[in-house]
Amino acid sequence: MSTDVDIVLVGAGIMSATLGTFLKELDPSLSIAMFETLDDCAQESSDGWNNAGTGHAANCEMNYTPQLADGTIDISKALDVNTEFDISRQFWAHLVQKGAIPDPRAFIHPVPHMSFVWGEENVAFLRARFKAMAAHHCYHGMEYTEDRATIADWAPLIMDGRAPDQPVAATRMVTGTDVDYGALTHLLVGHLVRQSGFDVHYQHKVVGLDREADQRWRIDVEDTATRARSTVNAKFVFIGAGGGSLALLEKSQIPEGRGYGGFPVSGIWLRCDVDAVSTRHHAKVYGKAASGSPPMSVPHLDTRIVNGKQSLLFGPYAGFSSKFLKHGSLTDLFTSLTHDNIIPLLDVARDNAKLTEYLIGQVMQSADHQFAALQEFFPRAVKQDWKKAVAGQRVQTIAPHESTGWFKHEEGSLKFGTELVAAADKSIVALLGASPGASTAAFIAVEVLERCFDTQLADPAWHARLTAMIPTYGIDLKQDAEACRRTRAATAPLLHITNI
Ligand SMILES: Cc1cc2nc3c(=O)[nH]c(=O)nc-3n(C[C@H](O)[C@H](O)[C@H](O)COP(=O)(O)OP(=O)(O)OC[C@H]3O[C@@H](n4cnc5c(N)ncnc54)[C@H](O)[C@@H]3O)c2cc1C
Image 1 (cartoon, helix red, strand yellow):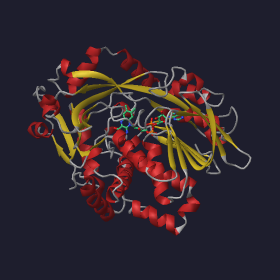
Image 2 (cartoon, helix red, strand yellow; image 1 turned 90 degrees about the vertical axis):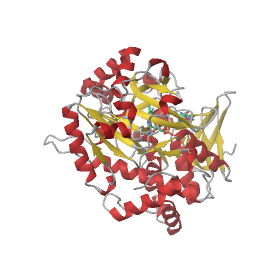
Image 3 (cartoon, protein in one colour; image 1 turned 180 degrees about the vertical axis):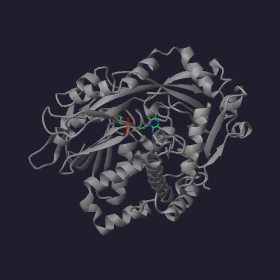
Image 4 (cartoon, protein in one colour; image 1 turned 135 degrees about the vertical axis):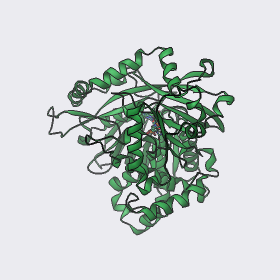
């Protein structure tokens, strides 16, 4: 193992794999070492079955479009997520075009995204939401119906056996996708290891991060098989360790990381691999979240295509486990507590009573209750066709408000998005949080570049390579309808997905 590299990537999930790929495209001479505790890449949240595989473009997730007090629908968050996904599409299309990804059907498939509601009040909400979204070019092609036969045509399982007098409504975007982020991570890491100057070290856990006198980072690594320790020095460190990122941010002791905490939310799916059932559904159907539920717990009935096989996934049912990673330790939550984050954490616990109530309710749910929730979506679901599966672990970020110094944090807040915490000298950055997640990995990588590699990006050669990868770099697709139309038309055929 080389003891001196330009860059260390901690964790072999979609985030490190994406950032590593960007960096090698921008400067092939960079030496990069990736360290991963487990024995392969994409074994935690990025594994195909540990997440829902939605190519989140905020087409169908109603939590991104809140209704304001005056009744109007705010679509600004949805538009951000929608256009962040365009960055991922361009990045993947670039890799397909240059042959780094031989066949995109190994990881992405066209699957329509639907929102589906029942009850008068929810129908009125969806109607207003459609009106607001369909007026924007980013949602060109969105369809809306309250007609039962049309919904049955779009997604037969959700209408079969439904009470005939129940008011229902649905929207559909046929441009939606299902993405196997595990397969994608394997493709990206495979492409990286074929390049000189890139090494991945599995069964190697990063256990220490210290700044050297020359401002480089000393990374202490433990071989999980032999317990032997070694040390690597790097100019730049990306902490893309998923649920392990908070512990490493704390170890780095950068002042910018003070006061951050994490709150783990686990998830359970119901999964159906019976072909006679799964082949009757070709959509990702998102419902409306229960009151107090965290945004990532919105129930959905999803077509999944993993390793070429079509299955159905329903959930997630939220749960509680003090682990920060699926393969983590039950002590993770407790060892993450520090003088700096305990007050923000208690603030969050106090201010989010509804969330606590929701999580307790979910944990207490019996298998019968869980199945009843599935039957609200799929009335004729049969128990023996479905089995339980444990989803990946998510750590919601608790961010300090205005930190004014030691012990003087004001209230903490629970963040459902992702957060990059970078050192002022740009030598280290940690990625915390999990939503919208893997779909926006390329957008997050660009953000890392802008924050920590701004000097290099000012170099015309770097800039030219970045715009070759992301042709709309620097263009706001929310404003520029023609650029938005052009990029979607260009990326869809390369990725074999639907364009309208
Ligand atoms: C239930 C659920 C549903 C989701 N649904 C979606 C979805 O539909 N669409 C979407 O886009 N996103 C979704 N996500 C989010 C998405 O899965 C994550 O955002 C994404 O996979 C995170 O990637 P990552 O590389 O940051 O983390 P991970 O994939 O968790 O990888 C981090 C890696 O770091 C390693 N590691 C940790 N600590 C260390 C250490 N000290 N040393 C070395 N290695 C270490 C871990 O072993 C792990 O392999 C979902 C997540 C969950 C849990």
